[in-house]
Length: 421
View 1 (cartoon, helix red, strand yellow):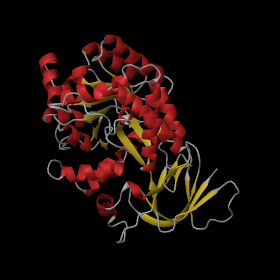
View 2 (tube, one colour; view 1 turned 60 degrees about the vertical axis):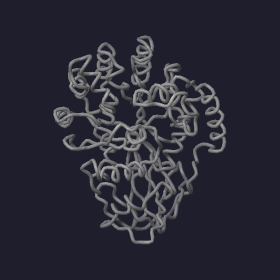
View 3 (tube, helix red, strand yellow; view 1 turned 90 degrees about the vertical axis):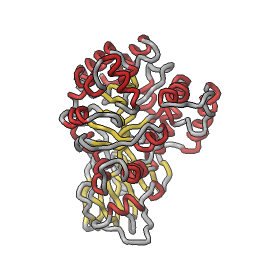
View 4 (cartoon, one colour; view 1 turned 180 degrees about the vertical axis):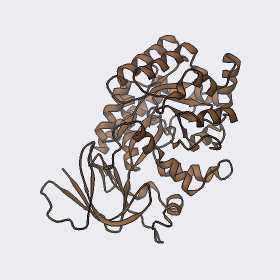
């Protein structure tokens, strides 16, 4: 079934050129866009959506998410208040991820996929952890995302922090998943991954032509641990093992990397993903892109699923700490598409679109779009979302699954989760 978006103002996501047109959207993974001056005869199985006064552009993509945090909103406070980042992990996030079971993971994935779709994202890169439900966890997430209609690039967070048996189970889950589906080899961070697990993970990356997805120097402790235990800094250690040799590798955060590490990253094939609001929430520091090159992505790190909000936060916070302006923050916002395309991942073709009902009191055009992007646009302006040529959000409502039923399910699973914390 095809979709026609009529009376549109189309914004080319790469050039920011505006054009008045009608768009025929082909369905499927390789579906194309056809721009029409006149619509002509409409087939009986074609859905026509009038977009008069609205803007159509490529849908969004999210560079670093954590499905497992979706049911944390409103959860009980930890028994002890954290005084540093390690305690934030231990008392909050590692306590939460250990409590997850299959039903909770499914609820988390459904909630995340719906939130992403309603905020305009149709492709999500996720980094998952559930130490007491490892086997099959990635398929649970994948199935939930596919029900909603959001494409994905998943990984399991391999770590030694729960013992070598759990580390091996993480490796096994990763291999079982990526031998059949597109995905990455996930690692938590250098300070919870020993040399043996790191080598096995890189071997897996090379065997399946994948990449490593890992948190890097999110806190000063990551560097301190690496220097004390391996006599080298984090990026140097990862580079020695070949982590940065893959253009599919994603390095999360990179707050505390020195000049040499920045040069190493810039000269490598790896991408860096920035997560501004998570850094603020965990009080770990501020991102600075200086010397890292231009392979920079934006993520939310599980804080929320709204990429417009993530971009705006990166811009505003970056005024005092980063080299950032309107064009560069938009480039980071859109670089996930470049990452997906460069590495031949599927699910982010040209027939992934968002329709924005943007009620600005001032004109938006190709000369001032970036100003509206930073100071005006929000997720509330997302009216329709098309994924692989299929309408998954219409009038702000998910059309692929029953939102009401899923929300009842997520609330039930959240209560179960909280009772275990």
